[in-house]
Length: 424
Ligand code: AMP
Ligand code: GLY
Image (cartoon, rainbow, N blue to C red; front, side, top):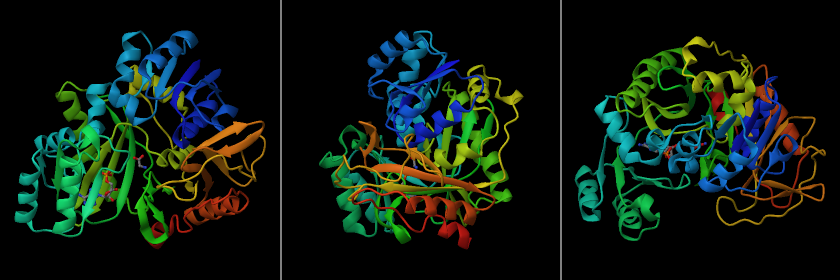
């Protein structure tokens, strides 16, 4: 079997690594891929958001499956386009990817089907939004853009002035473009956050091992929000009680709701959850694997990923048993100095072998390129240094030991990945 994977970050490197272990896979293609991915897959310079270019590439390569990993092409309808041309795919069609593409849609769905989430109102008029915030008089206030905004479209305002500025930046100043032409103002929730990725064929849902992201740039959750600076799996906050509660009150109802709306969701559904004092609630849905959650979840998967892809395509996920390792996994992201704001690229990375790997841990490449046999930085998040172990402490020790052996100019990483989880 030949598989084309769309995307070129750490998540795609983790997906491709899992696919490369399958006895069923002959050849993997990636578009655009990156330096590390090029060691496992044939890379083609087609942008993940180029729907026509990707269809052309698929016609040329004739893969058995196209795995669409990032949010933008899914929301733009890449799966629809490929399916309509006869290609089998992994990932939701646009009418289901809207679960991530529009927060107004997902909040309305949760309200209609009684799926627990923060209370909210939606607005297109700035004055009305500001009036509502004033009347609520509850801070912090949470203000979100409707559409995709690279994880930056959420503002937690600590007082009225900040909230008003947030509303104005979205609805009046167009800081987030069309994504911010409608906003959601919602209740602030508290509690530990958990990510649960789940395989679904539109009818059956099979949650994967839980994980915990570390979104802020610096230790102790300081600094700006990033795409994710590190992850651990499983997430110790996610007890068996929460697991059962989420299955009955969130996972199954969401899949059934999408089916009932004529929008069956096929692929990987990302549940961003908060374990509040009043039970587990949905913070957000994403229509795809998380990054860097995938980097710690897929190494624990024991079932052949290709079997899962086929079962989802054939809508027979109920017949497949999916098994997981009892180990723990940790991923420490090494980022470019300055990220998530301005940063430089093109720095040579030292400490990697000719495959971009290290003997101490598995290295998922996020933003790298390979030039004249050297790996260079090519993005904000550069590497996801990942290790498994019998317990979380062992996995973290291995990952950090490997980090010590890798360097590039102005590299920065968090030193406290997993610490909150270890404290329980
Ligand atoms: P999102 O992009 O919706 O996942 O939001 C980004 C981050 O903002 C989340 O991971 C939470 O830490 C935080 N957040 C979002 N919504 C809320 C909320 N209603 N209450 C508290 N924190 C929130
Ligand atoms: N790690 C957060 C995300 O993938 O959206």
